[in-house]
Length: 343
Ligand code: NAD
Image (cartoon, rainbow, N blue to C red; front, side, top):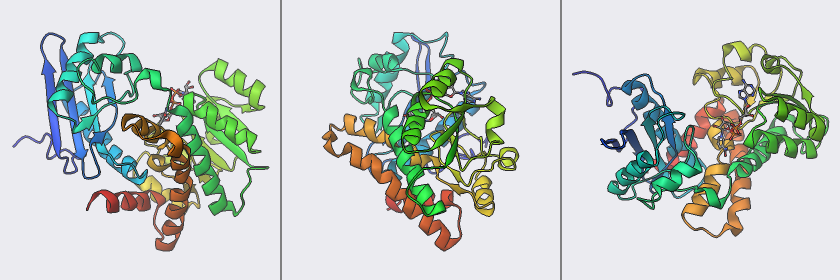
């Protein structure tokens, strides 16, 4: 039998994988519902010019599984899922494409709720919403990024407390990569708390602003891995914690917003061996999904700030447990998630 979904390396007992198509709009989408033990599966819709269907399957299986772990650790009453549209987000988007996706979600009857992701926008989600209510994070309800930044900040506080035995950022240096929606707000919070910033970005305007407003020192993109810093905060790209960068990083804490920071799971072990405290990405960057989930479920937002701040407490638990069991923090965080959704 030809290996496809069940034999794919990222297949992890996903409950349902749906291939959705529509001739008129040209929709070719894959919807993966990984786990709904805690509630309907929620996760964004990515549009990408995949080089093959197999690559799209791999991506949607991996990303949907990741959402189950992220949502469970964040204490949300939702499961994990993700969808991908095969196509070029710059040239292939039409309103009809996203309406067709909405119809496909409607057929799933609420088992999966989508939102924007890489390659899709609030405007695209508005077209999805013409055909279904199973869509979250619609444009008019506000940007989740400030909540992701808040989660990162309280996460970094927890890491500093654990690693350096202190509550303040005074005198600490943070090497922050990527001053985008999350990174800039996170940098501002760190600077206000007393940290010194060294930053990199490919966007010169963002760098100039950080220099002027936050007194940040600017370095070239590749130089961010070599600077003398206490905390490395990846807020741009995935896989920046790899054998090459790890041999260069001076920081004793990794605490940033980017998804999939570890190039391979083994990097979690390598961080531990090098005495670097790694705040698992899917724990520290959950502020945005917490905000989106509150909106979708119409949960009163009075508890939202406290919920996001609990990311700090969760990370403290992860750090203590990892020390006790001599395990990578990434493994401990996975176990906490699994204890919640594998009932
Ligand atoms: P963004 O696109 O607004 O910002 C990314 C920034 O990184 C931009 O300023 C870009 O110029 C910069 N950048 C790109 N390549 C770079 C490089 N080689 N070196 C340095 N900087 C570079 O994205 P965002 O919404 O701020 O998200 C940042 C990261 O956090 C992403 O990995 C995203 O997946 C993750 N994340 C975001 C949220 C959220 O709420 N927005 C939630 C969870 C995770």
